[in-house]
Image (cartoon, rainbow, N blue to C red; front, side):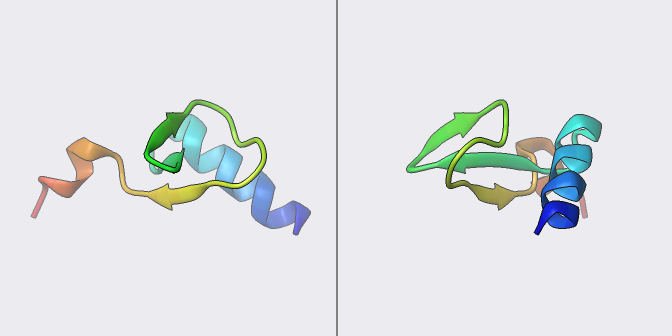
Length: 45
């Protein structure tokens, strides 16, 4: 799983994904989290 966590950390740093837990945005991956596209990416075709 460490390669998955490293990849998620990299995508967060590049702004490619956002993470949250129970509706609260997270800045860092710590504990459980959900991955989503950043809000601005959802508006792009």
